[in-house]
Length: 575
Image 1 (spheres, rainbow, N blue to C red):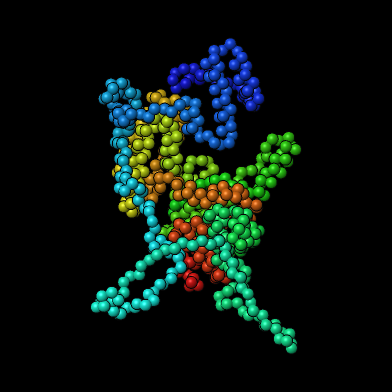
Image 2 (tube, rainbow, N blue to C red):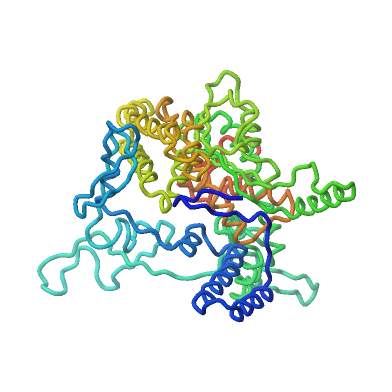
């Protein structure tokens, strides 16, 4: 089978798959050196063989990116000169195609580049802060240590109103206190050893035991200890066995099984609030959603049983679903944001559908932002306004920038300006309608010109449709309406970054502790991670919030709506 390379030559594609082991490779290298090939040619063949084994190993171990592989095999592509880049954006629009041969100003060499859409200008360089470092870096002020214990230090010999001990004439008056910060270290869980004095009567033998100090609870693990365990597991991503070893090293042992028992107590106090947050989120106006992989041991075992049963019937793969997913739904509900997680066999579209089933009748269609995977679609797409992530479309071109620098630069420059316009609208805190008008005035001409340029590339056969660049252009054309929803619907976002950032909490858990034992433990993780993430987004102390849910469990069950992360501080029972 033959194919046409980008250089115009013919490249033969091998029809059969070939697998070598290390012994075969070394034997082949030895035969090459014993052959009649010139020494230089034999060394080149040896390099090719050894490169094959290195690439296979690196790909199997996921140690090699596509860009690195391209650099190894093809070498680094030269960066386009500033003259060539500017020439690519100023092609003659009178020509029959969207590309033209331009003469470089400096050397006079001809450079072929695509025609940029009208109105697309090079992206302005961002202003760099003076001082040699990024803004916001450096020492933290004392106000950042809101949770620090405050200790007042007073003069031992001086007081307000006394004579100055230096000049003897003036009197001392009070100034704002100076501040010094000292950082100490503790275990995540600390223990207090109470020794209760016991007295026994010599006559009757009755034993009198001293009581615990006021404020000491009856349970061994306090509400704060349980909350810290939940946050360390589902926010920090610390697995139980690792925390067990750390606590034992510091002399406060907490077995991993005990940690789970205490975390389950927190989940028992929180699941009602999670269900209420689902009902609130179902009425939201904007929903970001995305998926990531998850491992649940009970489902993995179920998969093995299904595969074995299918093979016993002579079928290679079972008909039942075997995938496992964690879905993140980030929902804007009025002025608040709810973050919901689900870990199960259901993908993002099914979890979104279940949420929409709880939506009250008569409400306007919500905006749903995701990437263009079919697994993100719901059963009835007409019940929502679908938006697709423009950053995903941009990424398809940025990944190809090293191979098609001029063509990709045209797209990237336009999209960079569009994202800059959206950032400007955010900084100015424009209303949804004002933001829409701003994008229609600033971004719509750029996007319309880009659409014309994309269509021209395929219609005039300037780009092979089955090439990587052609597929990237086809993706933009196929989803153009949903990718540009921000130009027609007030409040429509440009990207799905919010859901992808939300998924990082579960990815952190997966990277640190690999799996959940059962669907129940995955459900507890979903409930607590949802509440913790929502607290973080709302600026609420998650540890204090989980403590409050435990201390007011009966009130929480009676009225969970009053104990949502953004509302619990105003609850009558809240401290």
